[in-house]
Length: 579
Image (cartoon, rainbow, N blue to C red; front, side, top):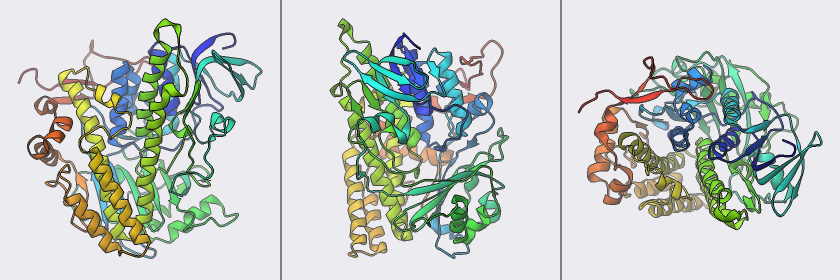
């Protein structure tokens, strides 16, 4: 590295940092990536949502990086990254009260996505996945240095000189800090907000465990209805007043050889302050003991590694950009792992940052505008994503005080999730079924994700009004039941939601199981009865051709495609050459 000037230096080699470094290198920039530690290592942020898987595929397709397409589908992850990740068929939420001995089926919710030919959500074993992407970055030519600590920066007129602990220096035109909470540049420039502007407060205790049995085996019939996937086939949330447990199995898939399950406890420290000196595992088990169902589920399990306890998770910054530098997503701020939006939003940020950096560093005439103003749109986007997630999670936590408010806010979350997922899905399907090279331009141009559609303003207004309803509950002006009735009435009146699939007024039965018949009902709504703008924006892809696509588990000799690490890639074909 000494003596060579790089276009970009990426600090940190987590998933977002290594993906950004790889994209920039493929796009013709000279990239260095500096890592204080080394891989493989444990990381949380393990649960994908459908949009996360889609974005892996989109970025792989857009930049012709097959390793990213590999991460879009669990089969290819299992075969090429390692047989250590689990399947993610959906989300489930089970509501508990202290001492409650049985699950109440009417107070649980299960959201199961459809099986798609292009992507399948995983529950990433991050030690393997992160290491895979670092090796991929190196295979494309990213200059990677691990076990290296940055000791200082010298911001000059035409580059940044980075000093590291072996006494050498790295020169780069631009620096992207992807180091997360302990952001080097946020500390250097005093960018952390104190107090943090985020409304949400939580702390967490987490580990990996063995011996966690599927909840449906311990509580037979508690799911309350026939579904296409059980609780253990996805991410399970045990929800209670002021907090939640996560249960993320890596051992729930036919190609996995893991016996691990990721578990964690996240609580509001204002309701559940930590006892001084209490061992993290002991605190975790004390919370488990409060809830008999959770005790039967997690009590017999054993820790595979020491539990980790955090202080407050939330942090924010005054800005994410400066002259010749940027804080990438989780270096800028963080809310909470509830709703699993971390990887999704990080990939959206990576897409935007990569486009802007390539444009700036490939500019004609030799003038490179690398000022903070040049990247103001990225700063606005990252601020919007952080604040939007804060609103969603803050209200989810305060709604947990009562089942009525919890189920009401869960429906607000679902509506937002649905309406921000479908446009990405539509763009992906257009690209696959029609070869539409412009399919992703709308996404790339939406620098505040989820706000560029005809229904976006109405959806945000509904979310703000539901937020205000919970304010009135906190002030004692509304009961939890009244709040639920008001919020559900708002949702039931929204024309941009598919009421043929979801009864937002039902006080108990709420969830989603997108089996082929239900998926057909959704598409029928979208193409026939949804508002015209929704039809044009979200359902303008070829349903017939999509129905003929399938993901091949094996490919015939002579048609095998491999990534740069030598892994066989999944491929897409039509089941029939005609029709």
